Length: 142
Image 1 (cartoon, rainbow, N blue to C red):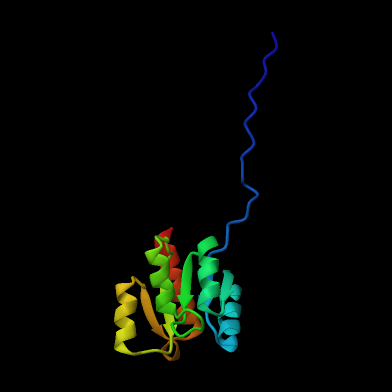
Image 2: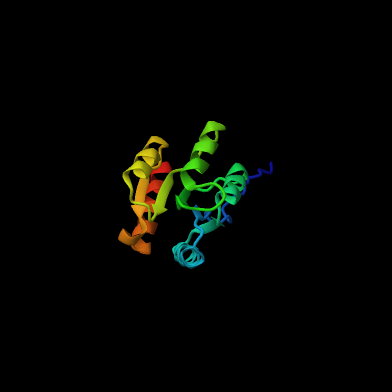
């Protein structure tokens, strides 16, 4: 009597590389956008970028990054109005971190009311510290 030994099924998805964390950088200053894009790319992130609030709005309607770095003073729709508009439309947003030169109290209060996770003043954080802060929020979500 012949016996057939069972064949183990092939494991699935074992060839797939882990996905890179995705960060969206909303920044109108070309130099800063290039610097942060390069830094996050070197650190293993996929970067989505927008230079104004309107582009960011349209992108966030179709893309879901793991974290958003948001300059508050951007053309077309300012950063806080952008978040407010998305929330009013019922959008589910990833952690949003303000990365701005605006250090005034009213902006900080509004950012807090809108649920922004951090309020980072550009002059006070190195690119490495910004990456570490983004990582902290992406790791919390996993």
